[in-house]
Length: 383
Ligand code: AMP
Image: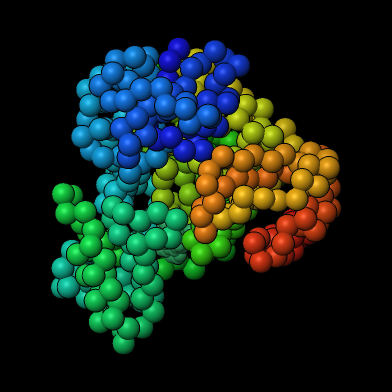
């Protein structure tokens, strides 16, 4: 089968690598250059979306900020999975919030802000602190503001206005003002749904961020009660969207309750550990779902963690001398903060993983990997 992925980044690349043993041929549409490329080699295969759509058996996506006209062409072909409604919900926080409410899934209290009056009403109704997020343009912590005190309100509003003035005016811009959640930790659930409505989910993953960007994910055994709660929320959202493919839900954990922070209608960075830690990796399961193949087991085969390599194009090759340590580069040019690759580390138990992580840290400079001390302490607490 021929699969066309909208977006030609690392997620399309890893889909292609996972699909090859199944004889699935993955090509990628680079939305910015209007070219079709091999997502592994970046070799150009053609130009123009219409021809690429005609050539594909299935069309899917690796990101949610796809121009609406592109989505419409794909949707019209009848080959687009997941559907455009799901992609739009992932790319527009207003639609995302509506979806979560409709699915009856707990999320942070919010108000849509367009005018200055809305902004001050949000402060009054939701209280401070507030997290304000651009409805359309924000990801990885960008297009976001924190408002802690009433005295800061005029300056934050001025900043938001400036941001909105510089944003794309072909789409209606807005801000989602959210109550600040005092969470205990951030976790995510990656799962897959097929066309028949069957659903499988991976174990809940604990996520550690630096400046709003994922740094480390931990996939460890246990957490049955939370897993069950997360699975129910996943099923509610995936069913509401008639979703097909891999979907990720990011949560705040507050005590023993989960609140959805956001959804990602695609394979997700917090699921990269599945390449070494799960029976079937998320990339293969996404392809299986969209190609109408049976879904693979999502069982955790061994405790595994993932470390993102951000803004660096080199790590010591000595990391490969550690047992069950795997390096995945994305073949991208170096840029500060850019996701360049990741490391997966596995072990037979959480305590062995903690020991191996200590060895791994010796090869990763603290300046470039600032979150690792916190994660090491956390692993010791969990073992
Ligand atoms: P997001 O782009 O929505 O994932 O937000 C980036 C990061 O900001 C999250 O990973 C959280 O650490 C933090 N954050 C987002 N929304 C809230 C909120 N309502 N309350 C507290 N922290 C938040």
